[in-house]
Length: 192
Image (cartoon, rainbow, N blue to C red; front, side, top):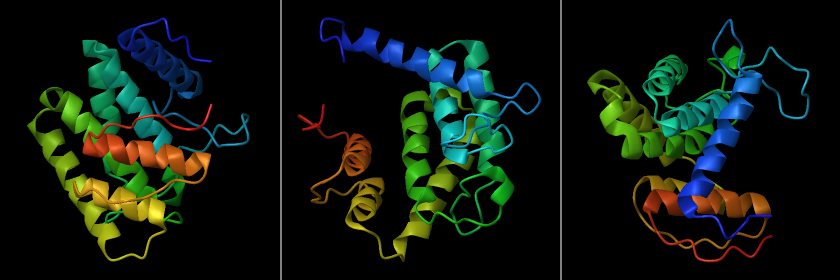
């Protein structure tokens, strides 16, 4: 349950600290990557792209010089695993195979948020790599037939509004991410 008495800034800070703690718990001291496999807490050999980019975002949100440098280094390493056509594998060991065709649409919003909020901290070279990565992800998605939730995401990445009515908790999550890309008001979400 969310305590409505706390300020949005305090809430965001608490969420950032939880995300960092979760990432640190699963971070390998050898690789620096977050290692996890959904559904099996004991799995320590898989390195998921999406979760690692989320961890990099939480490092930037911590706003310390050490965490920003760590986030930059992590992003540099992760962007190298984007395929030439613009998609990402779900796990590093699957590279260059991409079994999840929507991974580019899942990763791109994270990169957009990092660019928007922390672009001045990225450095010219990383900023250019990220911009190119986002362009490639959008290009990859351009010629695919998508389910409505992913079509909505593709449009949001192109900064175009589209109508989509979510019907499940998963779709609501993806819808909120797309709305954040467009910087539109989300309003009330009908799930507790």
